[in-house]
Length: 278
Image 1 (spheres, rainbow, N blue to C red):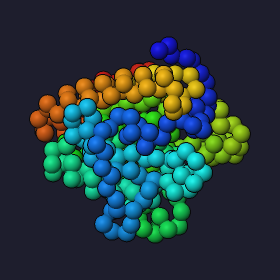
Image 2 (image 1 turned 180 degrees about the vertical axis):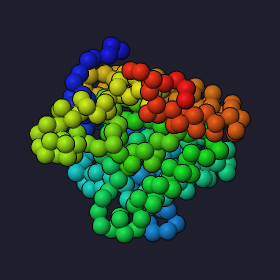
Image 3 (image 1 turned 30 degrees about the vertical axis):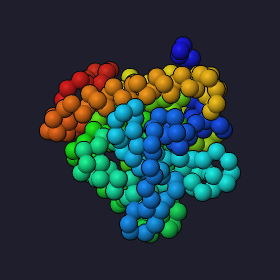
């Protein structure tokens, strides 16, 4: 599938496009025999996060996905894909169970960011995210994260401390939205296109920086129900299965060391290019 060159903000618009497959669509097309689990055992169940177990081909996996919903009703139920702290705690609970039963973890990320409401802050939003970052770094089972749309700030990173990160071609990943960045730097949200370019938030930018290991090509106008979409799922299933099998063959110490080194090298530069070693 031919890669189409686009401006960064066009990628952002594509990542947010109406009708784009959501986390539940990926589960339905990639995972068989999926059983969803609910609740964080502390406060309640956050429907922005779908978590459970199923099979990727013949391989048992734990799946954690952020879902934005399609219809207005679904979007409201899913809180437009912005998780509360109980969503991240539910995710971590399932990851710890995956570690206990030696199941690999697949995270599917699509969020503009964690929910910033007063209730979420009162229930420990920042602490929930921080706990995920800490626990995922030392989780003794393979973790693969797939960015399928937006990847906003710590809300996305809380499901992306992984051994391998893949991104769909029009997915984005950044510390802040282009509009938010423009409002801070230029006091003008209308400069979001310039901000998007500066943020280096597209999948191809992040591939060059080593933040993602692979960019998955998409058909034009990526929508559910298209024949080309099914082809994307078939290819993605093979890619994920192969990588998880590879990671599962590593010893626990080797797995954790590689994960540590993956993040340790971020932001290190030699001259004009990222350093391979530190």
